[in-house]
Length: 382
Image 1 (cartoon, rainbow, N blue to C red):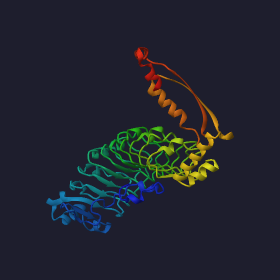
Image 2: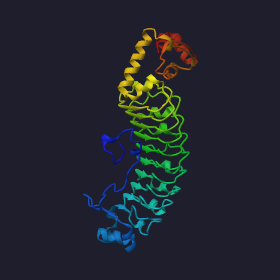
Image 3: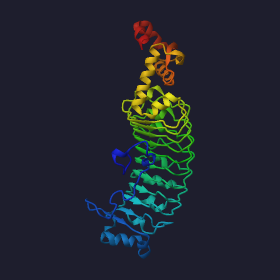
Image 4: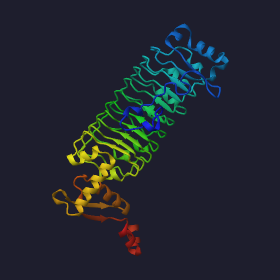
């Protein structure tokens, strides 16, 4: 589940919970941590009475001890710019600037050598300084939700240590390639204006939670369902249709929410997912029997497809259809992949009753010689 969310509440029904909450990440109420580190929270009134550096020094017991301050919150202080003195807090690991009036990322933030958690939600940010790349070696959590971001610099999507990124409730219409975020586990992109997901998703091999709800997506990339650790996918309130890509290559997927879209059918492979616990497809364009089964959850869907398969084996009636596939492949493995891709997308309502599969296998000369040398039966079987 996302940071700050207990395991029992991680659900595709709550798409905004993927947005990371970093306020007070280490010592929310101030004071000292168990390791001797210190946390400080200052209000607008306190900042008006004293400089940031003086207040921090008084809190930790003198300027010589400023590096001991590891967590600082200046949230809800009506800040339009950061007060002087932040650069002296070289020990900061967590910084909350939530609920202020900042329109740009302060340059001083990018100079903090140990900063791991940065939260800037509910500001007026319109741009992110490419200098944020300087935080790449240390920054693991970044909260930018509820701002006015329309574009992102490529530097932001090259922060290789980042594990949690929230960009929900912005104005993003297009994202640069995202493959540089190799450590990312949680990504929130809901409530934007995205018509397509960024390139490079297949490189996020550690991604477990993705929210893209409330956008303008008409399809999801097949690469998304090749991510080995993807557990939660929320894609509700988009324009997805008429079908989803095959999902069988997502072995960890447990929760999928695709409500309020334009889906006319569901992939057969959906029910082969070993860990699938919740699947929401309400308010789509599914045929009535399938829509009713989907409304009943995973168990209902499994029962529906089982009954549909029984009807097909008994003869099926007029709903069954002839499924003929002709392909040309360059290898046995390629042929197998093409066969699976061709058979998978069939609607659950009309499973194929008869499949004629014609293939022409074009082998390189070396493989053809091997086949003539006695390996042909093995290749034919494959």
